[in-house]
Image 1 (cartoon, helix red, strand yellow):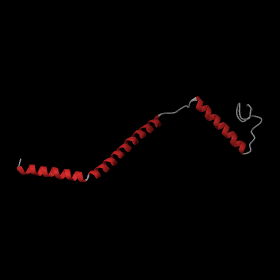
Image 2 (cartoon, helix red, strand yellow; image 1 turned 90 degrees about the vertical axis):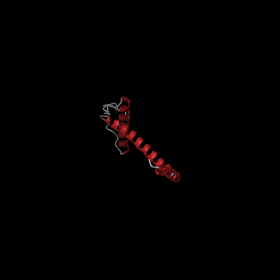
Image 3 (tube, helix red, strand yellow; image 1 turned 30 degrees about the vertical axis):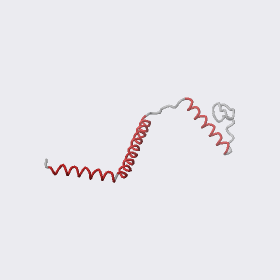
Image 4 (cartoon, one colour; image 1 turned 120 degrees about the vertical axis):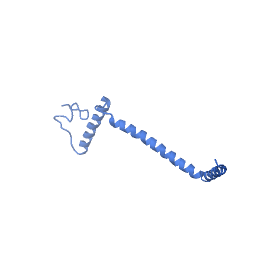
Length: 106
């Protein structure tokens, strides 16, 4: 190994240290941005994975309580809508089997 190589390597190391010290702020900002981007990517991948698994689950039936609540809300909403628009209800048949809103039964 030639004697000049040691001096050149030492000078190169010192120049690199000086350059890194002068540009420390740039590397800190870049490191922060890259870290934030990687965190966003990771969180996005986790959320995307959860959503894809949710879409793969087949929901065939809902629970009995939620089903009855939905039916009751629909029935009462339709009756209220009809009353607001002047419909008084079918007196002969009743509006629903065993209707609780008007007391009639089919």
